[in-house]
Amino acid sequence: MNIWEIIIISLIKILIIVVMLLLTVAYSVYFERKISAWVQNRVGPNRVGWLGLLQPFADVFKLLFKEDIIPTAANKPLHTLAPFIALFVAFSTYAVIPLGPPVELFGYKINLVVADVNIGILYVLALTSLGVYGITFAGWSSGSKYSLLGGIRSSAQMISYEVSMGFSIAGVLLMSQSLSPVKIVEAQHGWMWNAILQPIGFITFVVSAFAETNRLPFDLPEAEPELVGGYHTEYSSFKFAGFFLAEYANMAIASALIVTLYLGGWQVPYIEKLGLSYTLTTIIQIASMFLKIGALLFFFIWVRWSIPRFRYDQLMSLGWKVMFPLALVNIIWVAALIMIFNL
Amino acid sequence: MTFYDIIFYLFAAITLISALFVVSTRNIVYSAFYLLFTFFGVAGIYVLLGADFIAVVQIMVYVGGILILLLFGVMLTNKITNVEIRTGTVQLLPAAIGIGIFMGAVVAVMIWTEWKLEPAQIPLTTTKDIGHLLITDYVLIFELLGILLLIALIGAASIARRDQE
Image (cartoon, rainbow over all chains, first blue to last red):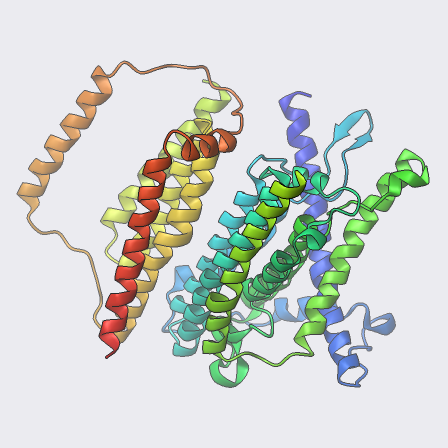
């Protein structure tokens, strides 16, 4: 393949992923509203389109036509930039997540991942640490105390939970002996999913993922009764939509990461024993990846409408005094597994 | 001019121009913001040199950790004291002499060093080798650094605690 072919194939992959991500985000907003309605014994959105299925598009167009307000006290350039940083981080993380096994298409061997880099997991960690900037800048540049407090809370929370997140990932890296997400998925063949081999790491990672995405029960950055809207209090119109989009995109990415690291990625246990054709196997594997992501997205929403919010000091002591030691225990556990069973 | 050259000059330009803005802008939050691009440019150059691990760690540590800490400090103190923190110019002559000498030393090193040249290529992964070296040849230094960081951490915690009483 020459360089132009590589560029064109990568661009097509990026386009597909962006479209998919946008649709996922739109419909996770829809399902968030629907599931919350079911939890609270209501009907939920059902006016726009069949069963309200066009509701997300109506919401987006409504937001687009609203007036874009920049407060007088705001710092204009940074106020405008913040939602773009949030969106950039949310979308570019997806580049290293493999959606399926390598496929042959039109004579090309195509990896179903935009960038198969050797340090993929570090790339994800680096980008999540960038996510703090969008929120910090949004909080500071709005020139409002609610925004500032929300922004600071959020960054403190994200930085704290990044520690236990990183240490949980260390267990996965030990097991697969690679930093590349493609290799991590390949290492989890058969029943050897990391969620089964290292349940403690799985739990700490999922909890940290909830905290990183600022979802309930850890949504203190936008705790409505105390902080109005948190860091996006002063945002309206399309910029608000940007933050909204980024939040749900982050949720989709957190789900995809959990699947890649702990739930075997696109692998279906023992599917090769069934003797299906190559094409069918590949399709089932890709479908299983999306099914797993969908199930986790449902889990995210389910938790939001079931568990009440933590208090801020509870959040911090949970992060540093429970999750972090547990992540360390997990590393020792994984190392012991590898030593004893030569995995 | 090859493809690699163009990318190199692009990253070099990003680094230098943003670094210029870091020192010339008067609003200190903007300084921190431009520093973000400087770190990015340097990370890009690391990638071009084949040091993928260093590049990502550069972003994780400097952008994800140190710069955030810096921003926190600026933002919190800026709002609480109601004093605009701004950068200004003082002691122009000594600064010019100092920088001139430093610049001369750097340029002299650049000219007289015999640089090891290698053709640009798609880099191989370096993570494994770095890991091996860190726990074999350089294990003492690695452990000492760990202890140093631990001391710094305990020191910071004890200072923060004493203030509360």
